[in-house]
Amino acid sequence: AQTVTQSQPEMSVQEAETVTLSCTYDTSENNYYLFWYKQPPSRQMILVIRQEAYKQQNATENRFSVNFQKAAKSFSLKISDSQLGDTAMYFCAFGAGGTSYGKLTFGQGTILTVHP
Amino acid sequence: EPEVTQTPSHQVTQMGQEVILRCVPISNHLYFYWYRQILGQKVEFLVSFYNNEISEKSEIFDDQFSVERPDGSNFTLKIRSTKLEDSAMYFCASSDQGLMGEKLFFGSGTQLSVL
Image (cartoon, rainbow over all chains, first blue to last red; front, side, top):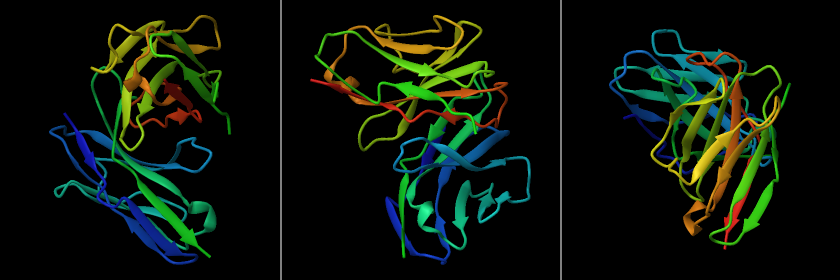
């Protein structure tokens, strides 16, 4: 079974600054994906970025990038030039093979607050 | 961007009553999921559904739970006899091809309170 751990219940950052959210996971799978989902006050979870385990290059999406350390089973999210709209709960999630590829294992979440 | 719609946003029920949570997935999506989040805990997978069948279910998804796609647009989660511990936020999600790593589109959730 997979486990995902987010050790930072809350984080805060000043607008325009950079913040890094941590995530570690444990699995015996060789091929899998890792995700960061954002949950704003509207409650709808939105995909921020994803990383395939076989790809060594870290994924980037505009201001969002990841630091994927496969050997260490670490998957952190870096948000550059933080904006007020980035304020949300952020979930790290793991997805692998099996019967259903849509079965994700989530971490506990990190509440990020961006201050003006 | 297309959205997954869930109704109602809040549902209050008495213990032992049946509830049906409703979801309208994105119209061309074929794979459907339910997740739940008990207050203060992780988001947990409940069930996945494809081609009118359950693809996979978790240990949480016992005999009191069922899912159905009654028509071409709705996807429902029924809890037959609610318990206090069923109080949670329930999220519906859908995806296009069910591929590994594919983006899941989530709804805004239904907050279920069992009294």
